[in-house]
Image 1 (cartoon, rainbow, N blue to C red):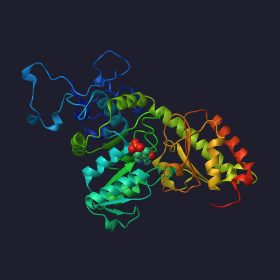
Image 2 (cartoon, rainbow, N blue to C red):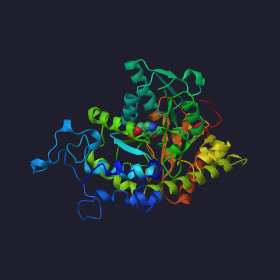
Image 3 (cartoon, rainbow, N blue to C red):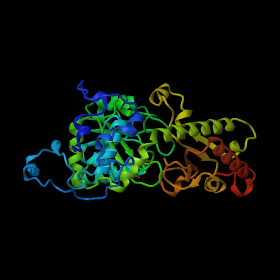
Length: 415
Ligand SMILES: *Cc1c(COP(=O)(O)O)cnc(C)c1O
């Protein structure tokens, strides 16, 4: 079995340059169930859990090829799980199809971001507000290499060939969208590359490649995993040469995804589109309800909430074009006081007070617990797949309670 078949014959039409060796065209959700079928080696319907770190070489001496006599493009068999392994290869086959680019999986989202920085090694990195861990890693990379960091809105003239713009959209923790096409044009006009951290909105909500992204990054710990039980990261690219370079680097960085996690990732991929569409629908309804309540005088929501933030509330025309099938399932609310923000999670029954996002269960987080860069009045909400009305009722009850305890929570106070 050739583990790299899906790379020789890319399953996604746009990258085949007309050489389309594929049979039936598949919609993305179908691909999540079937794009890995060529890897089946046993009759199990559910993919087997392979945990081996090393794999037997052929018994036939004629079939043995020294590593030096291969180039990486020809690696056809599993050798050692730091290079390739059955579960990671299977997950990469599914995600290559779904993300519309060659996908490589890593041990975490930050490991993926690290691998991209190591390979691209830009003299300048333009980045704005972003996941605090990506900022921390960029600072570390600057310390080691002298990489200069520019603001996201730097003048285009400050960018040079080989530089990178890193755009996170929708943005953590507020769930607001940034214009991918605008930043792709800005980067490409200067010979720079655009990397998009698309963790908050996997397909079908958003496909950064169609808007000009060169590399798409995901923390698979979020929606791709979707069950709050695996840590992982993904880099996807349309450029086959870059894919091989990243693959070779990963062998030495050693930051590949573990086999157990990749197996969970395959389990998760089967329902990815269903989950994300339901979560997005639930989130948009909750945001609309909250925004509506804010405009009503005397509403308990308006008494305790200062602001609701989400891409669905943005008015710019490109937002809907960038996310035609729905917005990300994370949004944020800023409460009127820090005390209110600390208290709301304890008044909820269906939203678990915890960090992270993207799982099937709804979460709320007083974000100051894990992120040093945000307002202490901010709550991040990751909407799950529960019944949407139940979620709204839970929030509604909690706001009623909060609005009824004004003295203790200093509703009219300031932080
Ligand atoms: C969680 C997250 C990361 C980091 O991913 P890990 O899997 O935790 O390393 C990066 N970017 C965004 C937007 C995230 O939400």
